[in-house]
Image (cartoon, rainbow, N blue to C red):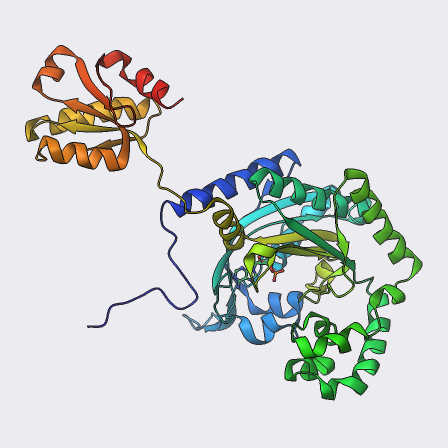
Length: 430
Ligand code: AMP
């Protein structure tokens, strides 16, 4: 029988790497908490219409990359429904915002999420079919201040602080404005017109996008197309005064915080819902998939999925790519050692060893328990691989309450009273 493997584009995350994942997630929770964000968890699958309307039919994600299926009716009364594994989380958060009337409080909603997303992309390093995003959204009625450029700047400042706190160095922030819902059609019309003349000399994808989604032409990475793209009209020249003022205010606030950025007029990103500010944090160590995270403002998204006016701004970070970047910076991740390996000497002491381990674990220590069937030599060899110390528990130790402890680093062997053991082990690695 052939062996079964994880499906292409998906993978198992194993220790010790999962410790890095947990560290990233706890840093995100801690940093976002300081900005007063709360956590939201939305379902992993949604009605397909949510993404078709929210992300946009013409986007690559919706047109080619979604895992969609017809969920069959189970009873006469139940209708079949088209469902989709979420390819991103912003549409789900905005759906939840509408469904639960979160805007009715009149307050700004600041929500973050951590979870898997699914896209049927061609797998490569840093690109998977199931990947994890950590993201956040700031959304609310206009009266809550949701349109303010200060919100954009605060989100960007939070991201810079998060990456710094995580210890990721060498990131680059690219920022742009894609204008308002009325600026963009004017620009797209001019862009379409300009593309009509040059598209035939461009790659197949650009030729298609020139018709279906001209903004995406600006994302093209094919070297031969670059001079043509550089010569195309730029969105900055089609922003109205209000859009220009919004963008300048965001940049001024970033300057005030000392956050370095680069304005990139080609940063339009892959979703239809963006307006005004769009941004991306890149990292050179990631190779072709160099975007650590991306985001932007989405002032019309709520209306696109049938909700009230609720301007917002958000981002999604690729957790897989944060892990890759940290691993590249730190080199190989080593498994964490336990504080002690409790070695029962002889099988009759197995349950006594478990009791001792229970005491030490309850004192907050990380403990491995051996097996009394092991010879002493094997216990030492195993303990040395897994822990900083070995604690021997024979009949004598059990009766006298004096335990033999050896520290593998120093080679020092001591006798420690059972009551003092937990604090001695804690002190041994401080
Ligand atoms: P997007 O939702 O496309 O704006 O992507 C936001 C971030 O999610 C990107 O910057 C990546 O870090 C990450 N990301 C997107 N697609 C994938 C994928 N297929 N595999 C791994 N990470 C991804």
